[in-house]
Length: 365
Image 1 (tube, rainbow, N blue to C red):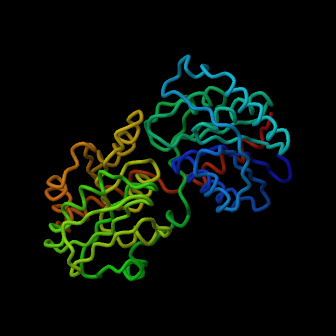
Image 2 (image 1 turned 30 degrees about the vertical axis):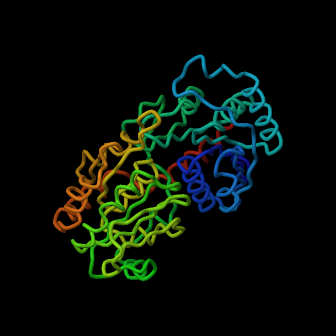
């Protein structure tokens, strides 16, 4: 390995790719403070905002939309593929990385192909239980393949978990509870349901929860509802006696988790890993689009007894009132589910993946 390892990390388009990238970069910096890390993304994703905010230099290349399956459609737009590859090779030749790391998505395909062409070591991390097309390609090019879930069917896959921020992995929820309740204007004597649809919110969750707000108030259950930057909620109750706090965006998810006794949420890989890893009982509502990966992400936690799962189309106010409110008013069941959830998914994948990357960098070429 060179004196100062150089790493090119490709991932973008959604928080599912950028969040583990940033968490891994932080772990690499803890292990090797002198390390040089560059991120590779496209102009389409939120990486243009979150990567610079994390203090990482960002190189942009053209996006290559990918099919859901490995078939001839992958090569249906050769001009875009070659354009992205040429741009990626220019970045590789300029920064001269020892290893290229991909987290999936549009930008990982030219990153893997460029690394292969230049004889560089490749590390692949798959965030979902069902791998995407980019990482299925990448896994054919390297033995250094890590997965977030135990049963992910990916060549050379080695289960380590999903890298999450140390702010979350080291979170002491009881110690922060009082600060979290004060931060969000919640009462200390009531159970709290956290509702979140991820970084963009979820209309189904917002509408269904708003319609049964009165039932939660009558049962003495307060709600912290993150509706998303463009989301809104129309509540069935306007009383202030039982808090129903609505937030468009929360930049302190550590405090949101610390305030919660259970979570109603989507089941993206970041959410499932963070929520279950912290021992929070959850009701998972998988996103009804894509290739079904969100339902598979939640399955290990649900099977272990740490969560419930409900199809998006079946999430009605009546269902929430019966099942979610029933859970929130049953402390013994909440405690049992918390214990079951906490042991399913690891929270130390950031350093495991960082060690894999450093090892691969030492075997360059």
